[in-house]
Length: 261
View 1 (cartoon, rainbow, N blue to C red):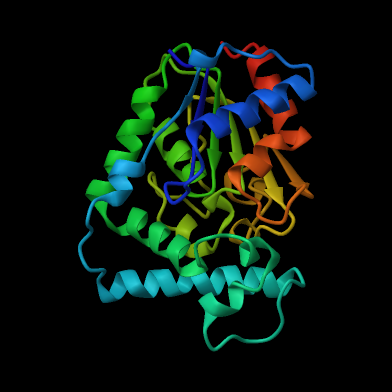
View 2 (cartoon, helix red, strand yellow):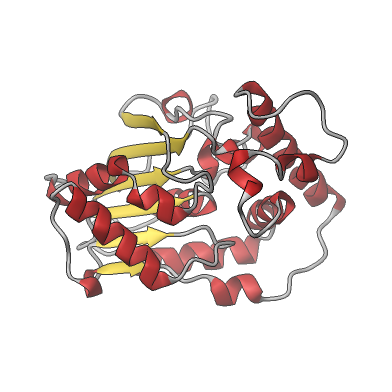
């Protein structure tokens, strides 16, 4: 079974071999333990993402707009955008985070909306993630919406699991409308800490507007999270870019060497 499980954003098209190669490169750069290739598992969601979905409800469309508005507000607050936007998705396209990405901002917001409102889809993504996590797993890495999926999956795994969680630009740091719809739901404005998580590193790129509404997760989940803001090598803030950052390599290496049990 896998020692490292990587949960990508379901909307990403990054090749599985490229993700593993970036992670191995990062571990070698920090002189960390490098597991055999078959001990690194990247969860695949392409077939689930490709399934036709029902037309979104008015409530779902409202949620999607709220996500885009939250991203725009984060861009304005961090100086990456100015004023109000008549077309939020089009305006976000000019920010450093989205400027070189193949898919427009509304595609990412629609994926978030689908996950939060389509119960069957949500559980299929989580079930597939949980199936990749075992008692042998030491580190779970989640990127963007994949960070939210990893979190919810770890809230529901068996008692035999004890891992280091590394979230990279996670949707957990996004607009409040996402946080309020977590499963399990927050209590008294506090998110639940997954029992399976022994250590938690949260890494956010300073241009990643999708994760800048609340980049310090300690504000939502309490103390114990090592929150880091980084300057990525490229402006795309993609999963590979995050994985190649030294901070990610150190976080994963720490998880592999930590005494979790």
